[in-house]
Amino acid sequence: MINLWLNLFPLVLFHIRNCDFIIKVTDITNDRLVLHLKHVLFVNYVEVTCSGNKNIALVGNIVRVYEAGQAGGMAFIAMEYIDGRPLSDHVGHGRPMELSAAVRTLKQVADALDYAHAQGLIHRDVKPGNVLVSRGGRAVLTDFGLVTAAAFSKLTQSGATLGTPQYISPEQIQGQRVDHRADLYSLGIMAYEMLSGWAPFVRENNQAVLYAHVYEMPPPLRAFNPRLPANVETVFLRALAKEPAARYPSAGDFARALAASAGVAVTPTPRPRRALLPSSAWQTVVGVGIAAIFALVVLVAVFHGGSVPPSTPSPLTGWIVFESTRDGNREIYTMDANGRNIRRLTDDKATDWAPHWSPDCQRIVFVSDRDGDSDIYVVVASGGVPSNLTQNTTEDTGPRWSPDGRQILFDTKRDGNLEIYVMNDDGTSPVNLTRNRAYDGNPSWSPDGSQVAFESDRDGNFEIYVMDYDGGNPRRLTVSPGTDFHPVWSPNGWRIAFECEPEGGREICVMDPSGVSVRRLTYNNVDDRHPAWSPDGTQIIFTRQRGAGGVWDLYVINSDGSDEQVLLQDRASNMSPAWCQ
Image (cartoon, rainbow, N blue to C red; front, side, top):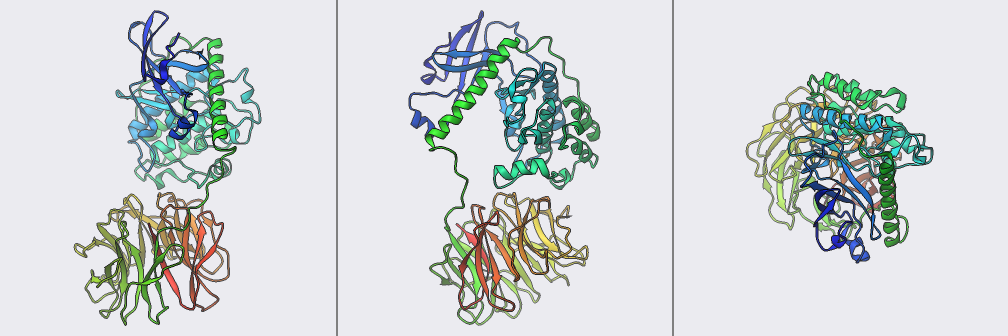
């Protein structure tokens, strides 16, 4: 019997079947829920390491379950303790794995799935968080809490949708009958993230993610990781096929195809000699897993007053900097994000425009012709005398701070045509990032500072491009009959907002960083320009022309295109907003 003092001690020694075990309890309940429950401990895992019986063999690349059941009204699962970290700690957030390491890890997970499938079992929740990687590089598939036995479980019938939205298969979403090929799709999604650093379908909410799994094609892998061999794309077209019959027959087939396309040799994983647990024990594990999930859902519903409400944009907080003609001349102004407390920042007979905040909201960079030509200036946000950063006789425009605040991107005509440069925040050490006969302008840093989005007519039409931070590896994102301008990365790096021309006039659009899933946010017969993200990424502020040839007003809209509102509308033209908090 398991010692029930788990709520007092994180490590407990106990004895099962002639073997001493050390229990390591992992509690996934959040602090708020624990506070509400007080005396109830919801145990997610009971991981064990055998310290006595050395004859217990490891079961391939599937975590070994020793015992499952209930004790004192508490559900438990006793399983092998893996001294390692989840694969999710190694991938995602723009961090691709090295190709050969990814292929080797994938091969081990594929072997685990093939073995489970041979036992008639479907995992249903294959994802990086359910793969543990030991210190020695052994990859182990865990968490069979949603596992179903294909031969007897009603969960394989229509109407049952279980899984994690980012990795779930189209047939699970649509409530169709599920077999082992659902795991193959999830494995493909996981492999995509391992090689690109991003899940293929990153959206504002889970509903949009599920829709994309069913109806949209994933972005090309090489858009995120151009170092990958080109023929890897073909492998993923089959692995992520919407129809189960079009996918690889087995996980091993997929892993071998990927290894061959990547030119990586993999060592076969030895097959385990016996099943994980007797069928009766598997049914117990299935029951415990599903009961635990149901209990957690009920608890969350109880303590949150029913269903979880959809996310809503934050109130308008922070500060806006913008250019305005309210005092007759174009000057730089700041105001609260709700449109109140407008304050004039610059006061000069010249024209000042295109302001942008430093990351700490302490300084503002802008363009001015006060010295006879367009130069880049910087001023403290509280006001003062601006400093000229680019003292030359050519046009310097479009300044943008780097995420760390140490550099500034800008475009300039100092080489004869408009090119993109980067300089230190004090104006020293300017370096050109583009060098061609095209117009390259309006640069924008990615949040991690690794990439730069910009507009260019290098292919004849103005489109959005992205390049590495040092100017290398330029690639085109948009291909449209109209023109596209002014790209701006979202704070989390998952979206790029830009000016598009779907029907002649300029509108605000958003897209993935790979250039796919373009979505139009505004619909009207006048121009919408200068998009800028709110600090939390839930809203976009932009400039709209009030009728043909009229003045310009500031609007704000949710990042999904809903709830458009006027933020600042008066007799003046108010343009080029930027948001900081």
